Amino acid sequence: MLAGSRRGMMPSVWSLIHPENDSPRPAIFTHASSSPYKTILCMGFCLIGNVYTLVNYLTVTALMSTMFSVAALVYIKWKNLPVSTNAVKFHIFWPILNLFVNLALIVIPVVAEPVKSATGLALFLLGIGT
Image 1 (cartoon, rainbow, N blue to C red):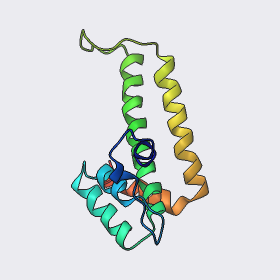
Image 2: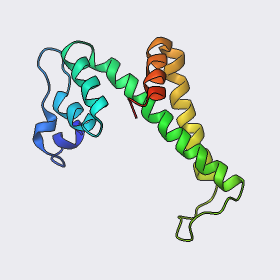
Image 3: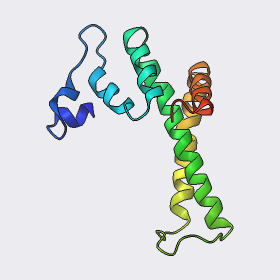
Image 4: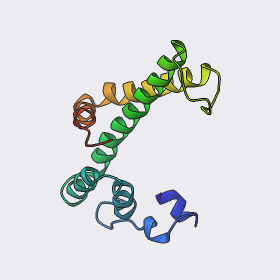
């Protein structure tokens, strides 16, 4: 949202940066407003903690959510389970590729910062960060 607002594609208020810690708080609050839990989490980290830690938590939870959704799609296609007649049809290669890319994007932060990634996993399991 920050990059889009700086290029004029989104509202300009999202391009504002906090002067003390260089965090894009309006963009973060807008993105987090889809869930009350995300909003509370974002407000807490923006006002008290490090925003980059929050970004790491939410990245892990978003990637895990996407990975499990794509894994369910791969399972459905692999087992030839019945789906809707107007379902989108595409080759199995694309969901499997997406699954491996998401897995790699989850493993890298887990290896680099295991404690923050474990917190992101806990948020995912609690359903807060999704």
